[in-house]
Length: 114
Length: 111
Image (tube, rainbow over all chains, first blue to last red; front, top):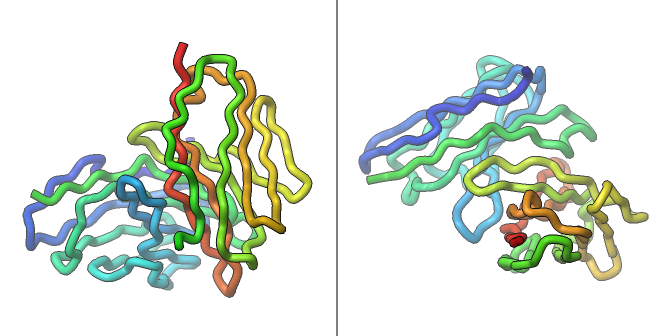
């Protein structure tokens, strides 16, 4: 079955450590996204990529980095520069053009900083 | 002011009730609107798109009022399985049509 796989599902990090969240899709979607969700807030866009080897900052990119070396993969690194990294992280993908209206999400990664 | 605002709820309703959620958006250039459903600690999933003429999908009806810049979702004959958070989404205008998510309205349907 086609879909998006995120790993790990739960992750604990000590302050000062970088962590990388994995996102893989087999939907043949060109566009991929990373969102962060905090209680009482809407999903906020961290980074997005519309094609391989290209990505753009979203609304809250500071303290995060991404790469898009393959169409299927869009890993997110949460660096030590991110001041409040504890959150639920969601990866999504979509078609381009009008198809970008419909996002397919992964099951999410829940990051806790100890 | 948030770009997409929703009443957080929770809306506690008995099975069989009709419940309505509203959502307002601030960007008048927004062209497309959607409702996503998110179960507790799960990922959001598209529930339905919202068309200018209004649209219905079974027990769910979505409407758009561009003049007042609000979107509504009506759920008839509520089921226990409808319990979830409903996210209102607007597609922003501009060069990149970014999706703007509201914080969600929580619905709890009880027996």
